[in-house]
Length: 119
Length: 109
Image 1 (tube, chains in turn green, brown):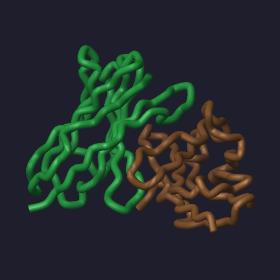
Image 2: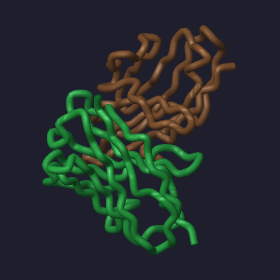
Image 3: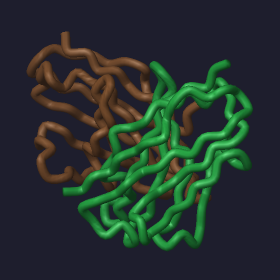
């Protein structure tokens, strides 16, 4: 069955960096676009970034453009997001999600990993 | 500030029909399909409706979606207590950027 498992979250000081990972299994990872979505405590969902199935293209929300970098290693079935210059407002649960082109939607999500930016 | 606009809350009694609206613009809803997600506190979102009005397997037919122009709606008929959750609409814009509504908290009275 399809599984997405995020890791790498934790407490980090403002201005520092953190890299999150999303390990995929149960499907052909290299055949799907992948996304990161976050949710601040008590708030709604915020789309962050997408990477094409082959890594050839990435797009970012304005809120993280220039600070976050999405990448993937298809040989390891793993998605990443490198987060630099972290701010208090980046505190959130970070989800990876698989994009299903037939459904034109995110059909599978990980369980999320919490990132807390605090001094 | 969310890309799409949803009412922050909705409510209904068991058995009732409830609708949740989602409004956008010509560059997002108006030119791309809309999806709906259900989220319970502390859990990941679950796909409820895709391509405006299609249900993934396993989603009860009590849930239905519709779209007209730059607005969309999620309808839940035969409301049940287990439907109490947060609901989000989502779509894309012409720059291939994703976007969500602010979410609607559904309360079953």
